Length: 449
Image (cartoon, rainbow, N blue to C red; front, side, top):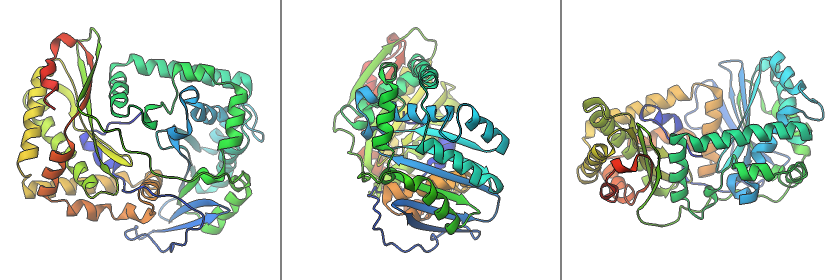
């Protein structure tokens, strides 16, 4: 499921541009990143086929290591949706070296954490530890990837929990709107599959299927490792070579996902007797390598600010209103609101969008907005874990980790004319999902977007 980005937190998800493949024959230099902090040096190298990005940050003793299994929903089919997520979650219930509850008990004693996320482009398993406990925590992470026990009783427990969570997502109106909007946007696209699975797909996955998937798909060619912390390259090479690099190589190669299907306006409704109505619309945008990608990101931020002022602050028609930007290989702009009066909000949204598309943003105001982006970006990337995610997005979406440090310059180059052009070109032909009382919305208003 894709996450909407609130206006004030939008910059926290600022990423990078164009996807490209990862190969073991990479000969790019590994000099420090262009704008890395004084205390950090960033390098890229390959350990027995596994690409590694290391930012050595000596300013603190926290180490973040994010392991990415590339491919996401492109590794799945409708019957296997959720299989990788189920396998990774179940790995917490025991491995060959750390059976049963020992995984959780050892992490608790170390004061470390290992978290999981499965999304449309990759699954990731993230390690957070202090320097003195890094090696011990790494051993647990590696064994979860290499030799999970997958005991039937434990798999059943995890499966039941994931099925309950999947059902709950469909019951919550906000989540239901997101799922419906995603379905309209990505009809026939790999992103249409649920990385976390559906109740039906999860219920049908067996332990032998999980074991076969592990044998076939947990290969080093699908891996990218990003480490940020006060550890050096020889140390990381030693850890990787003795653990993850023992897995089969495989033949996977990262490539960009296809663009969202071309289509016109679309609307879908879920009629529910709710006091508040939920509306979410998406409009597909440019490829991440396109200069308009950053311009559209800024345009949605400008529109979010205007909607917040007009819908929430002045008229008190909503607690939550924004123009989200979804960061993928192809950017997506959107419109989102929860409100008791959808028609009034739609008229305001249409008016504010018209103004954005037909009149240039005031230059000084744009500079202030961009500066806010930059401030929020630096605040967001104070943690080692967030820096690791930014470096990974740069590597995967543009093919060069160093572009994570070039984003600031890209933002500053966006002009008022760029914002107007991006709004005109991409914030059109919205595909809307509506959850709530359908008698309160005028469908003709939705068709104007």
